[in-house]
Length: 211
Ligand code: CO
Image (cartoon, rainbow, N blue to C red):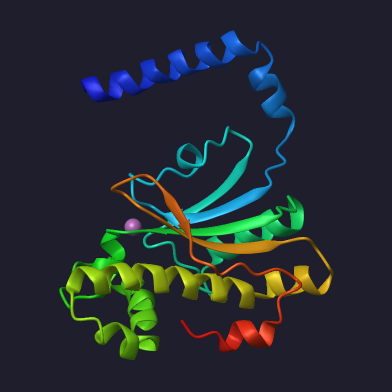
């Protein structure tokens, strides 16, 4: 076994000991059930760990991650997570969190074939196409990349708002807010991108939203 592999098993033991030192019933309580107030849809990138950057403990955030934090309406994985979070766990918030420097978004800006992932990146390329006019007008490549990351998050929040799961929750008056964030790898801070939707939001405005 590699040193790394041994180390992570060791780390787990230490983690359990630390938790038990603070509260002997820590795992017993967690095993009773979960009641997280939040669903996190983020990028698979190893540098954007959902719980850590928002200071959440186990039990506080339900998580779905994929490359470039996409909400693809035919993705059974995402839909299952969303359905369970909204209808069973009754989360009050869903956050789509993208991040600057996202490799998936970057790849979608180019035409290099990488492999299987090309098929996933198609969805991100669609986002680019929807906003091509605005994005192509930005000459500086870094600036364009950053803007694309932000636009991609906003687009995913809108797609989330259009899912039957969220639409039905709102129709039933369920308390559920959607938010779009972008995380800075350079400084660790998240920025709220101002796409905060709830059952009070006029959906016609959402559909016609330009950014
Ligand atoms: Co990423």
